[in-house]
Length: 220
Image (cartoon, rainbow, N blue to C red; front, side, top):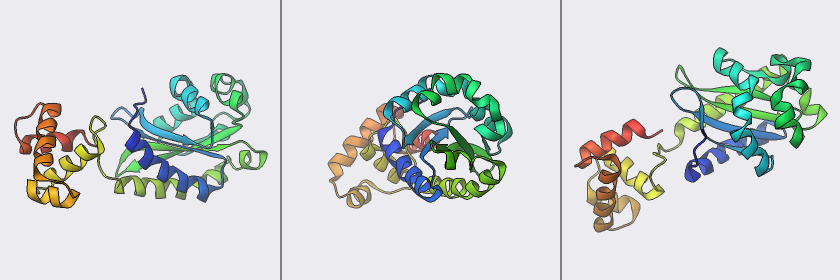
């Protein structure tokens, strides 16, 4: 199930927007995976919100292109994976066709050797639909490489925490003192102590060292 993490979605939208502009496609989706390679958090740009909801609630479960990419770890598209069977698929009839999405490419995002996410590049025009060939996938692959690199540079986050809580946990994990954290964030030490107390409650820990270790394990 896709989780709502609005700060992370904002970060992902910036990466997705760059891929959309660089590729010249009509829409883009960017999702990061959980440990079981299921989409966890993500965004879709260039399509209505109703499409995003329909795809996340219904489409992901019946998406044969996503399933193929997860199994092979290789780029694929509605053309290379389904061909003429695309418009007969449940995904097209129940989701994509309703919103004018004529096809899409799925490009894997890697973190070292791990499949960490997926970049969708969608077509709504005939010209872009014709780019979903094997040759077109090769031309699109650099966009996934750049997206993977940018994802690695995003600040680590635990989706349960506010932006300020994540900042304090991140700095505590780096070994900064309360005074150094307060200076870094432009706040007071009392506020830092208050947030650290709340962070210990969230992680079920009793000190900053244990809290920092728990944050490292859960932040993505």
